Image (cartoon, rainbow, N blue to C red; front, side, top):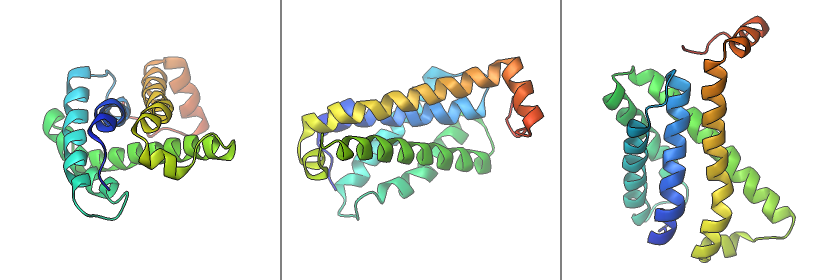
Amino acid sequence: MEIPFLAWLLQGIPECVGCAAIIFSISFKELAWKKIIITGLIQAVFIYIIRLLPLTPYSHTFLVIPVIAFTVSFLTGMDIRLTHIYSVLAMLFLLVAEGGIFSLLNSFKIITFEKFINDTTTRIIYGTPQNILLFAMAWLIHYMKNNVYIMKLLMNIGISTWRR
């Protein structure tokens, strides 16, 4: 399923950078924006090339997870197994955000799937809220990891698997 270049440029690239931001916010204490942007751009270019191929719609998501994982692992020296897990988590959050936003818009009869797929302007406008959610979630994870009080609270509840 081919993506229009303008939609890829204005909606796809920020979406990929947002996914990379989530991965880096889960992985590290500080957000290295240069590496986040490089990872997001590599992911976006790979997705654009994959979507030019005649594949089943949305199968590019499964193909891009290893690419993100290898890119993050290469740029940071992090264990490849952890980057795969974090990549899957980022894609799951993207799936939930994308599905939630679209379902909400569809339930209020604001947009239909056909209009979303066929109209580039609509795709860009209604794809923006999920990008905002991705960056907000990355910031929230980053804030929670750096706030000692919240970390102690989460550890008392039993969520002690967060990396510092």
